Length: 79
Ligand SMILES: [Zn+2]
Image (cartoon, rainbow, N blue to C red; front, top):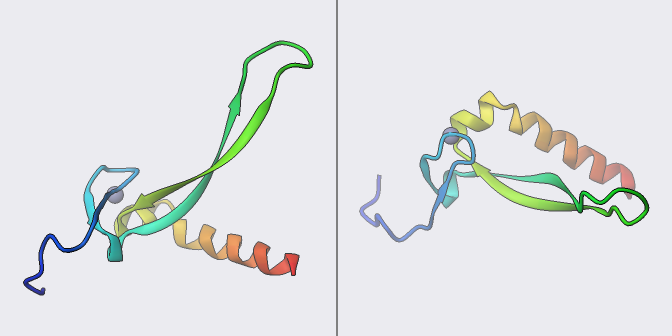
């Protein structure tokens, strides 16, 4: 390992909370739905893409790599 510790931004794994250097973190965009919880027509549900980061082992465990591949494939189909 190099001696430039601290020069890289640390991110926290969404799953286990471990600090991961940016270069080793797995970026994954997660879709969350927010609802206003109002009954009837005024109820608005919005979807937000939130970017989360996983460490390599959690990414493997949660099959993030496969999902990222699927997302990429879906994106390609659109063009
Ligand atoms: Zn983790």
